[in-house]
Image (cartoon, rainbow, N blue to C red; front, side, top):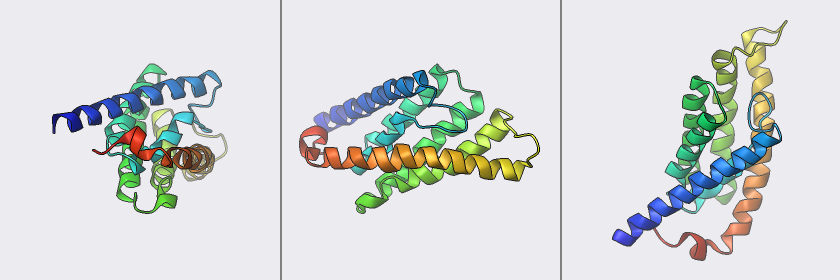
Length: 170
């Protein structure tokens, strides 16, 4: 029983650390924040397919990333909650491999545009709030499809062969 707790905490911590490192890499290329976000770290949102330890790991990793990259408080809170919701959804749908990236894509595509508009005040001149929301849903959604849908599924298929060796049994 004790070994399962240690394994869970270790996996969660490693996932959080990896999320932070990958976010910093994306941030160095200007890809981690604002309207178009291709966070390489979001590919990790498929990990709850393999282990429930990924849920707190992703949440803490996103929370730390948002704090360390200087995001606004609403982004720190709601952006991290979007990742948490996506991770919980991935875990809930783990029986269906192809659904792994769906919840993170949806959660971020809906929540992040609201953060951009209300947390950062990023309104586009000449567009209403609703039009800006639609635009940001499109741009954030495209980034999430790339990060979670494409990179995440590539990661899922790469890890699946080594599932037992990497994640063990929790």
